[in-house]
Length: 434
Image 1: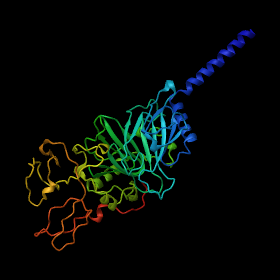
Image 2: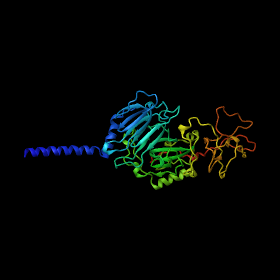
Image 3: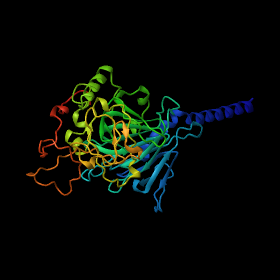
């Protein structure tokens, strides 16, 4: 009897251990363990450094980097040594779910010592650094993420969360060739051949495509179709309230700045956003909307050579846009001024147009609706035009390279280019939407 009792106790203990081990490899337990590892081992990650948060991931060093160790939880390396990082998606049987944390300078000035933009990568995610000379590491990168790969309610679908530090103002990054200006916390997902999504969890962001700025207030997202090479094919439609599954189990606790993720915009607030955007106004400064200082200021928008999207910009097909890494020093190519109501046309090289400088029309340039001569598209210059100086005007500075506007006066004298009215941007006022 004693022997049987001992055997029964031993068998029960083994079953209990086996059950505990099985529980350790369940989806919720894997997520919890991964986030605990980030909390414990990645706190010392400095500016322009990356931390190995949880298994499994592979980092590829840059050419010429000899001493590089990024193989286990808690390893920290300089981002300048990394060419790319590939994380594993959830594998319950193996207890795997890749997580990495980076703190980057991006375009933050050196007057913010120690502060960085937080990048939190989780699940089936890869990033490849394509920053150009003069940029900081990972200021421009190619992002790929898995699609609908959350195996349990406690695990988020794969993605990248980027968060700017408090008081830093607007921070700029370039994702898959698309410029993003943000003062906020933003979730990015990008699936080849499917879509690129920008979801603003708090604050505000601006997505810039072909020099047109598309505002994304908190509680909403923009979605754009992309090809297999992640090139954007179409301008986004008007912002929509993101779906509840976008918020599901997001690992925001691992971010440097704790936030309350904004619930999806309700219908009334969404209609307010749409009405402002259709009129070319920033969706800010009213109840339910972010403070206007969370978006780029009107001067910032103009200084970048952008213009705020208006109704007809949303959802339009785009010309083939050059990928930033493929054209490090694009040739200067002025753009033909857009004239409301101008029909699509084929342009013969050397053709003349009244009141339009000859340099504005060149083979390969793009006019909405028609590509000239079926040649590959040239680099498009979307900067605001300037008027040529008249006989009594001082000459332009030697470093002025913006395209000329058509002469506006009867004698072709210079006149100041039109500026958007001040009412196009709401003034910063407190509200309950931030």
